[in-house]
Image 1 (cartoon, rainbow, N blue to C red):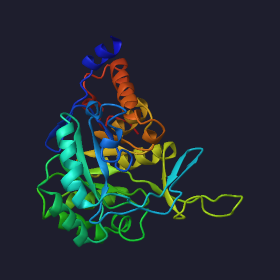
Image 2 (cartoon, helix red, strand yellow):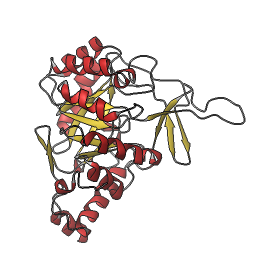
Image 3 (tube, helix red, strand yellow):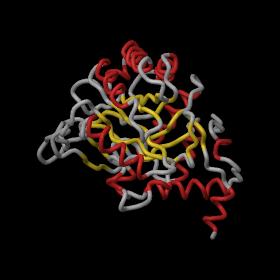
Image 4 (cartoon, rainbow, N blue to C red):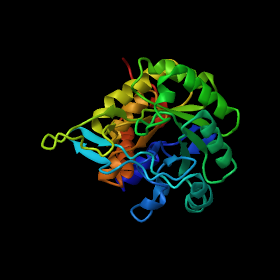
Length: 313
């Protein structure tokens, strides 16, 4: 009963990208598959939405195993954008989501190896039903080509956002990397070339060794750092970007609780995404949502939208 009262007392809705999200909690790309993988575990339709795993033009098997290694403050991963390819996403994955979900919103994360590749992906998916926006993945550190290079060079970031903007009227959200000298500047470039929103942040590049074998713990060698250690880095990035741009921001990195989500909202994020926490507990998104609702009720937040950017530095 208390949970019902709290839920009724706090308005969780956020309206961005031309759509109303019933609450700000989404599942991050690469951590929830295409949604169907979690369907037997909980009702995804209770969340604000999800970003499906990154889509590439052709199917990818991903990097060599092992792909994931835990450490005290989080996780190191190098999945390598394993996915079913754009045709399967267009003809199977998105149609299933369109039939299954009534309230949760879907973002399609796309990853190319070239500007032309990104454009081709967008053009193939643009008329497919079942999603509300593209999430342009220009920051994945776990591939040999493409990925992070676009988010670490101003000229290439501008070029790819400009090219994609020209071929779609759908909302375009650009997912940026944290390992740049000035993420606020990269946010300005993305916004200036037509991005409707930003996702901040992707993983940080990292490396760990097995001290017995002296070999890297991941099959691909290096990988991306995620989990609790990433939280203050992500919050700082959102805060920096919010000072420079006025487009909506999705905060992601290290969120495990409602209080963690509030950190991002106070920094200026409108929505948040749950990533690594879902590996340990597939229902982590619901737990974060419940904690966020309780926080709002305790702190007299009539609407969560009112606390966006309300943090003081």
